[in-house]
Image (cartoon, rainbow, N blue to C red; front, side, top):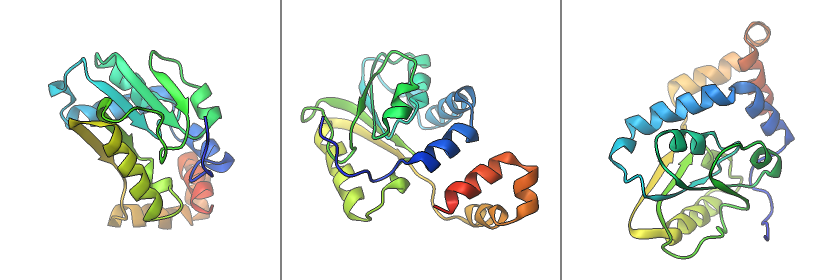
Length: 179
């Protein structure tokens, strides 16, 4: 499969990602989030693709919630290789999805779009691809962080050496934040 130049995903990010949450913690987080987003009302027969799926823990959460027609895409072959579950995963660029037009009921991205390097071009390409593969009555679910006062505070804490020594997650985030 052709791969466009890497918009996100590098060794530093993958190290931070692996150290920040365990798979079990991440699956619990995704399950809570999806429940708040109304997953209980979605058809269990829906064809779902998760963009920027990383290790696939969002897909594992969906599987545990009863969904069986799952696919995921991520640019990182090493993250995709860590996936253990029933979904079909693709190592590819989210700006060029390997799916037919109008072939998916739901497209989900949970915290991946903010890693795109070329805004707004990469975001436009990614969302255009999401809309291309969605059926006419499909659902696009996007969960992304934005610079809130809390996130500004987190960035400030990351610059504090004492906090970084006391709380390993802050140190991991701070390493990634400098990239």
